[in-house]
Amino acid sequence: SSVPPRPSPHWFKRALAVVGMFTSKPPTPTDIQVAEADVQAHTFVVCLFRVHENLRDKGLAFISRLEETIRRRKGFVQLRSDKPKFWKIYDGKDHNVEPHHLDPAVFDFTSILLAGFPTFEEVHTWWSSDEVFEVLKGRDVIEKFGIFPIDGLQHCTDCQAMKGFGDRFVLFEFLKMLKFQPVQQYVDDYKRLGANALKDIGVNCNLLCSEGICGVLMNEFPLEACCASSWRSEIEANVWIDSDNYQMHLIPSRQNYTKTFVVLVPIFEDKMEQVVFDAKSSGTMTRLRG
Image (tube, rainbow, N blue to C red; front, side, top):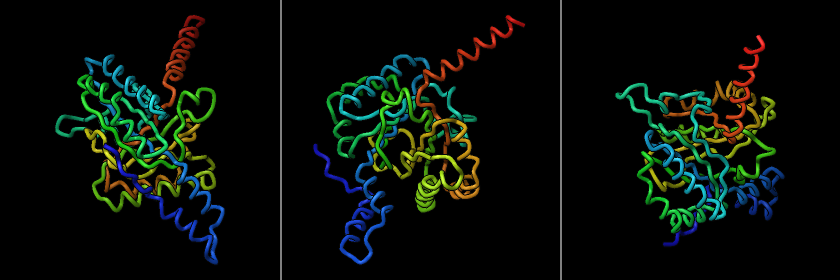
């Protein structure tokens, strides 16, 4: 069945820019830039998976097949990570790894895939395709998973096109709302402070999305909002996390109104494996020489 066109949540910005052309207050260059970005921004798809521990190889193969369907439908895969050992957790570890059975973790996924399509309608075309239907027949190797479209703030870039350049990490904030209005204010503030990060703290916060989810395709995690930004290095992400803007303005505004898992995830896990291997090899050679 066809999905009716869904107006962008930012439609009013574009409308204001157009209306401004016929008034005494035409849009500023910034207004036009924002409007153009809204027109071009992709719909991101946050995909979260918990693989059965005793079926890990088959579970990862399932995710790979789903990933292939995204690219065949002219989507983009900006990140896929299956190795939590390479994740750097800043906040909410208990929401990813449950401290005990009386307090289950709400975001206990073990794999993340961040995809994107040019439009919301193309997300649904992909999800309702025969290829995805065939892949989902083998979902019993996945303990649970969630697929959540969310309005993006820019184009999604496929990681296969980023091997030699570009950002190396994505900082995610996965949020379960306890109260709607403060969380909506939080994601708006995140966008505002992220956009000004270069001016305020000297690092570029490359915002991918910061919004409540705009749909649910598979709902086995309680994700209701997500902020994501990409970074060239872990050091730059740390500067953002340690900044007064983040520590004094953002954290307090979500602390009592969400269950949040904040984690820095590498875009290229194979390079992380190589770094670990090189470090171990170097240590071995040092011991031999000693």
